[in-house]
Image (tube, rainbow, N blue to C red):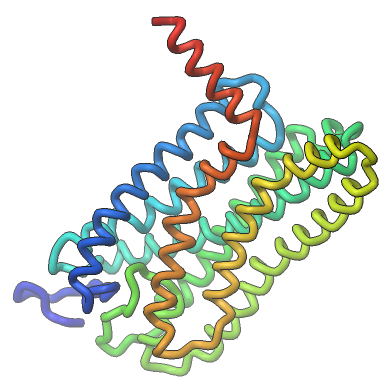
Length: 312
């Protein structure tokens, strides 16, 4: 490893956008604003889901999980990135890098699975409305949410261990702003074909399995909605799914683009910007999407604010 301040440094250097000092200043300001809005927006969703009895439903149980996940996901990346953007020191400790990869990868995998579970919930609500409460009972909701978290972090733990077992031969400069698998594979001084195959295989399962479930669920939903004769009924049914479908399109579209495009040096900066999009922008926009497109959430917000104003 390189020497830092005259002592042995056993961490990593996150190059990020260090070759563009002016861009770093812009990113510092924007990311700080986005991070604050992410925390506020997702905390609001969780608080409303807890305070309003009308939101004590499976849909908002999963939405609260998603909001908590997004806050943790952004927090595992943005604070360290802000520190690196604010000065010349771009380092992260060895332990910090391990923890960041484990948590961010685990949360990313969990979000993929959770979005698939939420699609099944929407399928049950639209296609089986009379049996919805029987199908999506509390125990099943907790079981599916727990399974998403456990599978996501089990996958993350496996890949993190395998990545940090790779010999780096003194190399410690990661051409990224966070500790992620692709930059580490480029850093290794041995053949990483097996790691690449395992990463690809795992990403196929974690990404494409939920996508398949989502496509099946929404295929059945569209079919059921088109059989509704009233226009208002169709609009209401599509309205319950619109927010989730928007979030799914943004998250999976970006993730599939990043993990399945051919690797090249020319696309490295593009990869960084795309990573910024799904690690910072999407967690910030999720609460906006669900709030602006959802009458229940807007109604709950008005009730809470109205009660607060009355108490004063």
